[in-house]
Length: 121
Length: 108
Image (cartoon, rainbow over all chains, first blue to last red; front, side):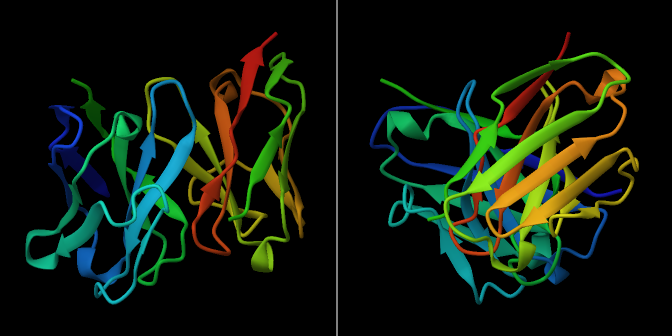
């Protein structure tokens, strides 16, 4: 069974940094692209970033480009999201999601349960 | 960026009825690269449909998708109590990948 477990969320002041992690199990991690998708409280879904199987293709939403960095450590079956210069509008539940394929197809299946990031002074 | 608009915003139906959810794109979605997700309260989204009409693994056949270009539809043939949730369409034909704002399917 595929499992994705996110961690690293919390309350952080505007302008500060935070690093999210996602540990994967139940599949061959280095065969698949991975993504971060977020959901602000009571709102819809927003794709944040994706990384293909060998880290050769990386993409970001315009809203986070230049502030967030996605990475992966295949030896640890882990996906990361380094978030800097955080803003109140980055407040959301951040989901880790496995891609359907090794390349970033953009089909998200399955999703983790999410880690909550709150940006507030 | 492709903007997806879902309608209606809320759909009130009874178990056993047929549900039809719409997703319209601001420009043509490449190669039917359109997915549907279901999100129940307090849970992560779940993939239902990809490629506009392909059911994901384990999804009951009462769920079906159709459409191409800019107009797509998710149909639930006979609603079960567990189907009442929020549904999102998503395009993955071009980056950034974008979602619709969601349709809430509620019990009438």
